[in-house]
Image (cartoon, rainbow, N blue to C red):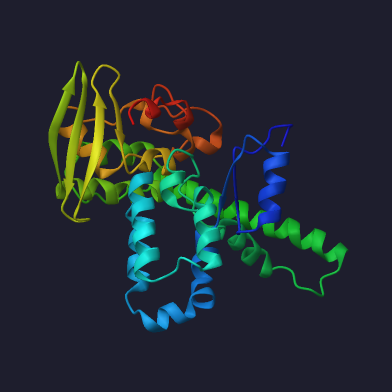
Length: 303
């Protein structure tokens, strides 16, 4: 890749890969595929599942609804005690490797919203339509060219729809209107879900320090509270859920705070070029003035 090492690597859970990646790509952010870990539960914890019908609910709550490291570790410890898993070697290994697979530990690393290796697996599935185990090397080269051509045509068709077909609006939000012009249809649909969720959020200012305000945002849909910090001088907003840092677009909680603070446009540093309609053309969107890499944001200063 032109001598450039990957910034993020996603694999299945494997200690040999873990050691090799740490040695060869020491600066890459490595994570384990969450789906591969979850699919092992029936095999590794079959007896627990048979005895406790509520185990998966508790496990999922621990994994998906822990917004801080302290919160996760407390929930994990409670789960281990309740289901008597203190001596389970697999559970111990999961906790030791928690920084490689638990979403809470990954929210400051940009993975374009991916938590599984489904991207590479979908590529494998894509090529299954063109080649099989009986395909010769010569046939493979020709069919590979056809596969790439078909894929490029599909991408071009998607680009055409993005550029010439208006998305359907689901709210009067100025955020939705703004990003419909900038984002690709696929990303806009994901962002649109966050816009719709703003109506279920109620921000309460809890602390004010100069121009940096801390809010508690009550999310009535998720039935949880989220901490959001807003710096009015820089127009920077950071939510403890870290959706922007992880997926590259703002969450409902951050937008609720922006709205309550009198900001009705997504600041340009929260618009990533990779999600814009012009991304494949290699130039910055005409609808935005600049782009800031999520890794260059100073969010860690907030928490």
